[in-house]
Length: 157
Image (cartoon, rainbow, N blue to C red):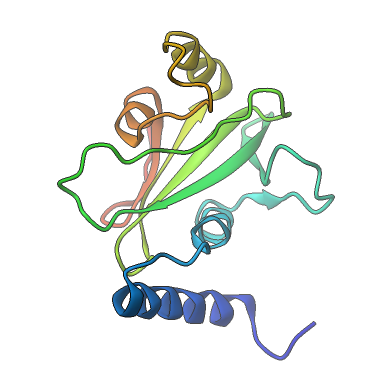
């Protein structure tokens, strides 16, 4: 194990990613790792220690364990409506997708989860133009359950 804690490394990664974007206008590809770290720590998920392809962590819902992919998106321009979730690989083994939405400082603002059947049903309704299995964040939010917000913490039913 290194001399730095993962929390300190993630905090420094956030800082570097923000500074890099401000200096170059480009985005470092660190959002997925920050999102995985945030979702696991905030929601108390069990990480995929076996590194099995298709999912990043286990989400416990009572007696049910869900294998979840964790995706992250940093939103720099709230006025844009076309933010996308990215490629969804339906052939892989997963039960749900958790999306961590971050602000321009790469800090989490909200976390939502959508079940596999809802996601795949939506993707089936798309035209041939959606060969990569992508979905807008707005659509993901419409079919998902809000789990956590920066303002309220963990959401309860």
